[in-house]
Image (cartoon, one colour):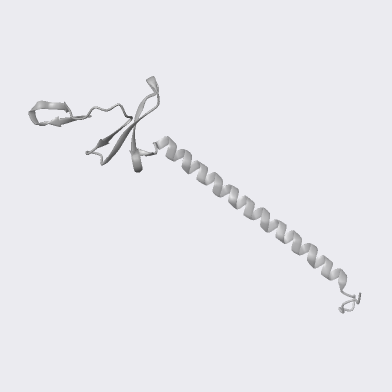
Length: 108
């Protein structure tokens, strides 16, 4: 970890072999993610920097997934309503068949 110290410029203030370091400037921890050429620095929060701040792509994916879930929920709700209406129609037909043409119930 380097910090700008007066006229001395950048000075190493911390050396570690862990994948996380604290940042006073950002008020969070920075975390190394990935291996080799795919290593990236990510902003992390939570206990032990266990929660990565989402990238724009991750946020877009989460938003897309939430919209898909909402659409699926609405489709399920519509299907349930249609099934309930169909059941009501069947029960109404059964009730109608139990009534005598004069409007009185038939005795069983």
